[in-house]
Amino acid sequence: MTGAPTIFDTIKLILFWTSPLLLLLGIIVLFSPLAKYVKLENILGKKMGGITKIVMPALETNNYTFHNWLLKNRIIVSMACIICSIAFFIVSKI
Image (cartoon, rainbow, N blue to C red):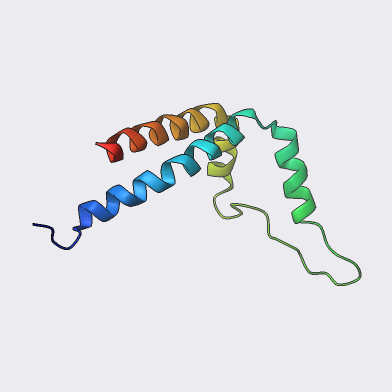
């Protein structure tokens, strides 16, 4: 007897499909050098032409201390992403 999918089935499906994205994010953060991130942030915050419009505001301007902490501990954050993605994948397959 099959019924309507429950909320747990929906959560399981979401975890299954987001786990590869989380793994990819963790690998990118783990292997990308910090200098490239700072260069990207400077390019996105640069003023364009004669108009003083910022392309994209600096990330985490309100919570800059948390932003700096994440940058300093990016290896721990990326390993946590990788471990969570593997755990999500295993749990969602069961």
